[in-house]
Length: 169
Image 1: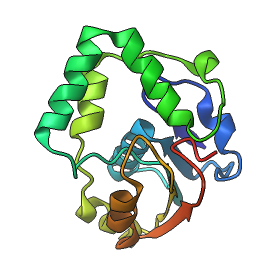
Image 2: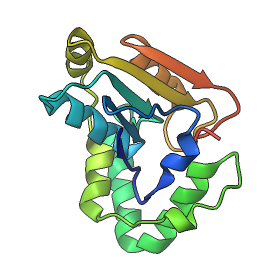
Image 3: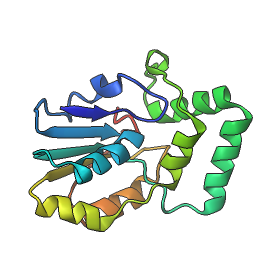
């Protein structure tokens, strides 16, 4: 399996054993990594049977001012921004992610926040025979779970997990 990490994280795939499939023909990604996973599969010439999107970072429902504000806060105090971000990632659990911390660059946050999920790309992958599964925590404090569910459920299989946050715990 090829796995793409979430923003500011490394080695967090251990938290998703329940959702992941160990296969040479599977690609998965968490949050920001879900965006990267989709692009990887879309541009790949290799056989990929399954794409697993774990709490995909979905911000296209936000105003541009929200993105500018997030970027400004990050630039002003990267450490405090990431600390608060991690607190929201683990909610409602109290898992400690500091061992998984891997601070990204400003450009990565900008890419994460401005990414637009393309329905046509998703449809094309399904037509190619790739099974796409999306997992969303209903109590997600990073993205709007309702908007994310609304978008992805029109296209593919979506699991909305009650009482779980962005980390799906």
